[in-house]
Image (cartoon, rainbow over all chains, first blue to last red):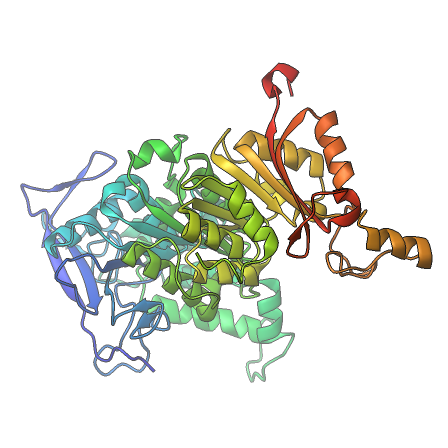
Length: 381
Length: 205
């Protein structure tokens, strides 16, 4: 399935005490470990690096196969030779976010001061803190300026955060199915998910490491999430009202396929995700505000950054109007931008599934930024 | 320059626009005109287009384009963001023409407007002799499938400009590839105008 072949997660460590990293909220954290993967090759001019940002539950494994694994990375359909993020041309980097549980430092990591997992002693991190860690990683990799930063959902927030925090370090950004800030509805869904975790008796104020994990709560949180990632149409198409045979003598068994699907997704999720990371990361998303009531122009400090904004028609979790607000900020600040609302029925999940349209938009956009031309010679597609 | 294969209206518009200026093309379609303006005139350009497939074609040409409708897409730009705002063959399909034209003159220092002339002699003849809504080369649709919301003539537009105190700086009238110099409202299929606002601030609009 994957064209990249076998890949391996690598680790970068920095901010060892007493040189701890300062966080946006004033607290300090160190040492910090960031898990990352790279695909393709960095060219001699070091101007072909593209940073891929994962969504809320993603990790550094964006493409290729881990040894012995059957399933490739989460955006393998977009990354590889000849794909949207063409590894024949570009050097692709993807790292796990700070606060995550995919190998980067997070609440489940060991606190050097106590020798135990941080749990809720872990500081509240922000999207900008995540991006600052990525900047450190890129400095370590010897990359001064990225060709692009791209990601969907929370990945898009990170792309926007790169645009406002390090406008001089990016030539372009590609925020997909995302928002400048969460709406009350988005915060509400996240809060219900967090409450699902915190009301699990096994959560024990976050101190469950080494004991029974709050799997019930975390699975329920994930089930809620999955409802918001799909659309009315995509659910109807996928499940309809089909029922599954069940031998369980219980009134409220998962009769409908959609029920079984959600339960399966929930149960599967707890195997790979940490409940406290869920709390910390969703909070970082809720607190994110890309522009903080300042015009984009002020953040850009005169830097010329190109923007490609992509939204999906049936996405009701990150509706297209939120992408249009990004576009509006670009218009008002005279930023060169392109916006496309892709006709899709997949809901928010579309950013992982609408490969053909996304690939077309991204590959042409990247080509233009990379070769710094205004228009192409060949007419049409 | 190899202008031979270029559409006559595009060629006329290329002639109206100063080199290296900034342009906003409203209803840019697949981006042919915008592409020419950038390539041949060294302009910097932005398009707005409602059709998704056309957006993909624009992106393939390396153009900057916003997916959206003209009626709502224009108001978000600052005053005089562009040297020119272009409305070529899109005016007749906009819901609120007056508001968009006024906004185009706010966002652009000048505007270029091109549209099919409803009072062309062949249209007149069709109405007169058949008593039916005309179907011509520049107005190729049946009444039940036309995207056109407004049917205007060259005289209508000139009258509008006079009434709204809009200054017509240049006008070009075309019949196919040929420029029409005499009685354009009768003989031209297409009218192209370079316009600018006149004492807008004084009018308090």
